[in-house]
Image (cartoon, rainbow, N blue to C red; front, side):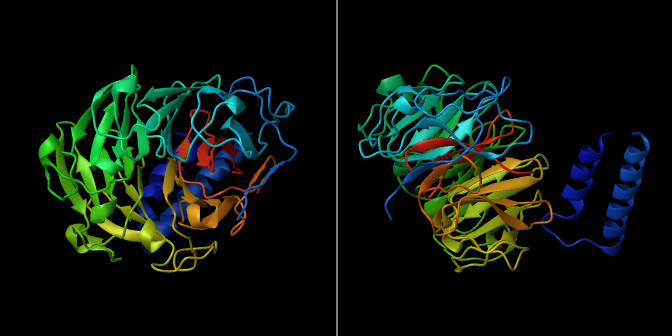
Length: 406
């Protein structure tokens, strides 16, 4: 077993979300030391700026776009912020299909990637779901621009109201939170949209399919066994939809906005807006109203990983020290969590030891500067792990690729 794989399995159990015992700490350092020795013996207004950077490499799925500067080949290990689709200019608002910088987005929110390298964007303002191919071609997968409503159907016949976050499964299906309709929808690869849970009214009820009720849900994620996890924003709860369509409440209490660690209904959230799941069945909740990031382990126990409830600020560091400001998106990359820290206009990373750092953007500076890090971002919302291990994100009316320093 590779050292990295051993470290991931050992540390995910012994560190994240709880304190280590003396034995666990000793075991961690002992195993790490032995493996390392073994390895060594074997061998305001939005402005735009473009910095020096690299974009093209032979094996990545994201394209070069002719309307942006040509980047030289990106050396291995290079970092930066690079355009995927959309643009920033005085006439760039609206929703328009096209390629790369010729496409237009109108308030894009959630973003997801599938195994083939396609990106999917929930465009709240236009009530549509957009698709970006690996060649940078932007199309509208479902919904009709500006036609708000609630209707299942194929392609342009479907209707949404404030679609906000989404996730793709291994078969190319996209699951999304239709927040304004308080339902969970599924969009097939051909654009056929169906409702899998909720009845179109704001409420709180467990049950199967349309017997369940949500209230303005926003966050959504899939785990390895096919459960759909939902940040039920208006109810301040974490919900789960199993493969049979049964909806249950995992943590939080309906209508109770607060911040409390604990088990199940004892825990409290406040307007959580996104959720992610790791390979060890830990669920991470972006607790937007509290400016914190929470973890729910496989026993249903909720703990706080980063930020302090009610403290909107920008501070890197360990739990109890770190501060965020109204974060609203999350992507899980192995042991690392990438957070769209919307209020600070930054992307933050929480590592295995729960230490928070800033990887892109400048706190308090809302603008678009692409190229070398840290660059600048404008209130990023959606963040997703792409197949090439880069981070795709939405900021202003752009879709951007982030290559963070590791």
